[in-house]
Amino acid sequence: MDENIQKQITQLLASPDRLLERKPFTRGADMSTIEDNEPTVYAGGRVRARLPKVKRNVISQDQYIAELDPNMHKVLFDDNIPSICVKFNDGSFQDRQFMKTAIPFQRSIMEKQTLHMASMPMKFTLSDKNPTDEMQENFVTFKHYWDLRNQDGMKVKMVATAKSYGDAGLLFYMDRRGEIRSRILSYADGYVICSHDDENGDRLMESVYYAVDDKEYIDSYDDTYMYRYELSASGEWKISTFEHGFPEIPLITKRTSVAWEGVQSLCDSYETLYNIFQVLQKKWGWGMLYVKGRIDPKAQKIAGNIVLNDTSIEGKGDAKFLEPPSPQNMIQTLESIFDRIQIGSGTTFILPKDIHTSSDTSGVAVQMTQSLDIQTAKNGIVEWQNVADKMVRLFKYGLSIELRDKGINTNAVPQFSELNINAQFDIWQPYSEESYNQMLCTMKNSGILSQETATEQNTISRPDEVVRLKKQQEEMLNQELEKTRRTKELEAKYASQSTNSNDNE
Image 1 (cartoon, rainbow, N blue to C red):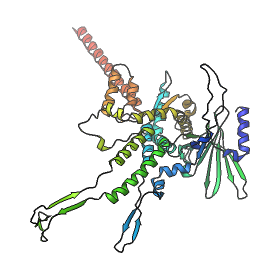
Image 2: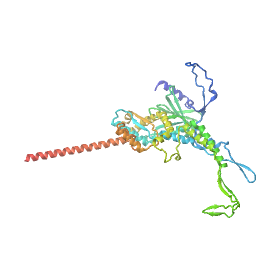
Image 3: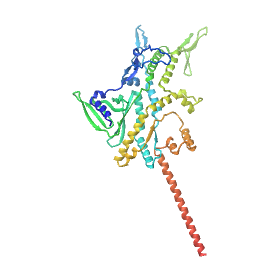
Image 4: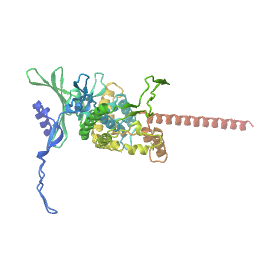
């Protein structure tokens, strides 16, 4: 390890309070710190550079938890929502509090973004130009165990956690059976992630602050060791050091904005206006049956319906159901805010009522409709590429140790170290599997794709599909060789019989 890096790590370990320092989450800024009177210059002129002076407002991750949980939304505790005043027969009045409604926009946005970005299985490519048979078999083994240990599920859970609470951690470890595993560290579960970088932005250490049975701990990881601090009853930190067994920090962390960061104010406005709309509808939105004329008290009942007969001389009786006027402006405002929420969050919501049998429901139409989701997902996979690469590195190394220790492959560590596996997130969007697989066949037959790529990318292949095809081809080749051998034996036998017959003549 570089001497300067080791020095910085030693300084961090010497002060547990520094390990607990972290970059805060912010939302908005103190506008009084922004200067409006910028200097004027001529064309081509210069001004002296100034350091940023904007002061951002710090926000707690507890706020993200409250925004994600509909039962904690501010509208449920807002006393400014109108109530309904009821007058009783004795002349007294009483306010009846209206049951407020929270709308889970934040959760829906998070789940939709996670669906498009992370729900598809990870795409793996063996980057070696001329991979050997041994590399191909180890590559298949890697993908098999990746599915067996549900690492795609862990990837989805990590993305959902980061988009829900602002950050997430994925810790790789060897369990008591010597198998490679991973687990999610989330703020909602009591784990506070504190990352530490050097002056170039490279990761020095990862620290996790948590409590178990009211006892506080700090787990810190560098490339070789895990340092566990425990807060004693006297208020002092006691440290224990262990080798974690991985060639790099086994904790993957990702910090990002929550999925609804840009539309939180719109979500609040929508909930407030929606609840006011409900109050108005409950108070004024009831229809009434209006009956005009002198009604015969002996009403007849025909087919289950009561017939009110007008007995007045004029015969101008009438009966109709009156409905109050609908607050159309308020409805249009709600629809407008809903559209702005989708635009601001880069998320679209297609409901069953939006799909009509007479409309264009082709793949192109669906893609255009969900262009915001695809755009957000594509930007996201670029941001998360380092996470994908590190997941592969840690899982590949841990798997090689597992296979070696279990005696499955005693040379797994050097062999797996030679595997150059490229991993990428695959965007989900609605499509026809039949059309997609047909496209792969067409591209393979035209020479644009190799058979191996078409085999790996179609929707029904298994991780060992390439090995199965190779085995099948070898069996067919052996059958052809056996058939050729038998043909030659028969030809030699007939030739020998023919020669003997000529000799006898």
